[in-house]
Image 1 (tube, one colour):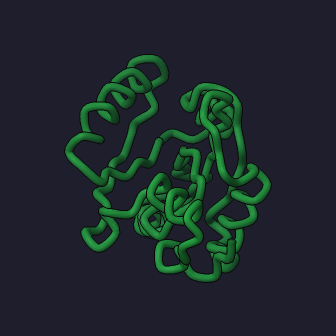
Image 2: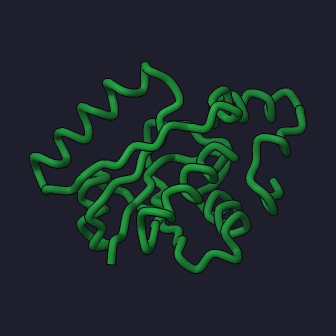
Image 3: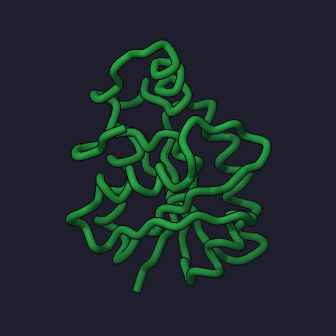
Length: 150
């Protein structure tokens, strides 16, 4: 079985994230969305709420699972027997960072990183922008996956 993890903070999980996972299912039998717990990041939504939102988005897709983790991403991948890390790139600026992490992960464990480019209609959407809009009382439903309610 080809299993991948799709790691991130997902605060909130956006339509861009959703698109990467849906497209990733063409390559993997199972994708585990891993919500990384980073004590240095201030989040808007609790981990429980983020898990709930992701469950709503994939309620009819049994090949997508959701878990939280508090370790190095590559250690999380090993713990769930995933041979791949799925990542999405929005900008050229994301590339160098992702390449460094991918090279390190492959050197340490042999785990490969598969990168999908964000679809152009979602490339401007980020969790940071979504949080900013929420803080000003704006409706972000256009930035969320189907079936997801805040």
